[in-house]
Amino acid sequence: MKLRYILFLAKANCKGNRHSGLIVLLVAILVISLTVISSISITLSNGMDEYRNDFRARTIEAYPDNKTFDEITLQTVRNIKHVESVDIEDEMRHQFFSIENISDENGTYDSLQKQFDEKDTIIDVWSLIGGEKRRVVAGKNLEEAPTFSCIIPQLFYPFDEDVYATDGLEYLDSETLIGKTLTLLPSGGYFSFDYFDGTDSKRAEIPSFEVKLTIVGVYYLSPTADGGPSTVYISEETGKELIKNAVDNSEGGKEEFESFINHPEYHNIHITVDDFDNIDYVYDELQKMNIYVIEGTELGINPETPLITNIFNILSIFLTTSAFFVTFILMLYFSVDAVKNKKEEIGLMKAVGYKNGQIFGIITFEQLLTTLKGFALGAVISATAITVINFVFSNGSYANRIFIVNPALYLFITAVAFLMAILVPIICEILVLHKLSKIQPKDAMK
Image (cartoon, rainbow, N blue to C red; front, top):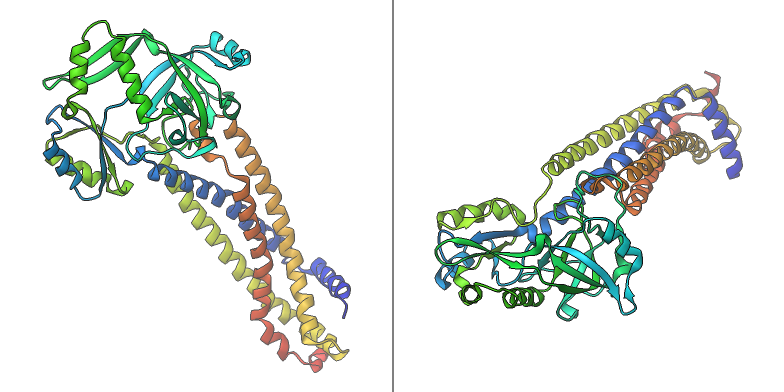
C-alpha cells in the first residue's frame, strides 16, 4: 500500500477518534513543561555553576588584624585541606573611579562623551590576583596586553545607578570600545587605600590623580552574581603600578606608605578554595587559627537566586515527569482500546488483503498525527512564552537577566520534545502489536 493511502486512512480515523482532543492537550502540556520550565531550570543551573566555579566566588579575603601573616602562618594556611592557593595582596582591589573621557588615536569619542558629561559615571576597578582569569569573548586577555590595559564587561554600564533595581538600562556596545582609552579620576576626589600598620587598621586618602587605561578586551559577565556591568579588571602589574603612582602623588605619609608596602606580613591575603562546597570548612579552620576573615567570598550572590533555581529544578522534574507518564499511560490505554474497538474493522481489512505491517502503519500514523498536533500547539505556546520572557528580562534589571534563555538551548529542548512526540506513539503501538497480530479475518463477522 502506498504511503498516501496509509495517511488518508490515518486522517480519516483521527476524525472519528474520541480521545484525540485529550491526547493533543496532554502532549501540548508535556511540550510546554519540557521546553519552558526545563529551559529556565537549565539556564538557572548553568548560571549557578558559573558562579560556583568563578575564582572570586571561591576566594576568601583575610585581614591581619588579629594575626600578622608571617611565613609560618602563611604555610599553615596553605596546608589547610581544600586550600588551592594563598596570594598576598600587594596590588589594587575594589577601587572606584569616575570617567573623565574616552578617546582613541583620533581624539575624544564624541558619541559617548556626551553621556559621560550628562551622567555621573563610576566604575569599580579590580586587579586580577594569583591564578585569577576572566573569560574574554572579544579582543585580548590581560596576559597578552601591556601595562595600564583593562578589560570591560560584555554588558558595560559605567553610570552611577543601581543596576540591580533599575529596568530598561541601555548597555554600551563593549566590543566597539576595544582600543579606546579611558581617562579616570578616583571617585570622590580621593584615591583611598586601606592598610594595616602592624598596630591598627588605617586608611590613606591620596588626592585625586589621573589614570589612563586602554581597553584591550571584553570579558563574559554572568548575571548570577554581584559584580555588575561596571566592574573593570586590570592585571596584577597594573594594580601595583597604580599603587606606586598613588604613593608618588601623596603629599604626606609617603614613608609610612612605603613601609607598609615593604612589610607583606601586614597585607591582606586571598585564600582560594578548590571547590565552592568546601568554603565553610576552610572558614572554620581559619577561625580556629584566630585569623580574621570577611563574611562571604569576594564574589557575592543574590540570596534569592539559589532558592529560585531549586524551585524551578523541582518544577521541571515534577511537571515533565508527571506529564510524560500520564501521556504515555493514557496513550497506551487508548492504543489498546483502539485495537479492541476496531477488532471487526481490522479483521475486515485483513480479509481484503491488508497485512499486519500496513494496519500497524495506519494506526501508528493516526496516533502520530494526533501527537504532532499537540506538539505544534505546545511549541507555539512555549515559543511565545520564551520570547516574552526573554524580552521582559532583557529590558529588566541586571540581576534578572539570569532568566534569559539561550535560543540554542531552547531549540535543543524543543527538538527533544519533538522526538518524544514521535517516539511515544510508536512505542505504544509496538507494545500492542501482539494484540493486533492476533486479530483474524473471521473477527470481521463478530
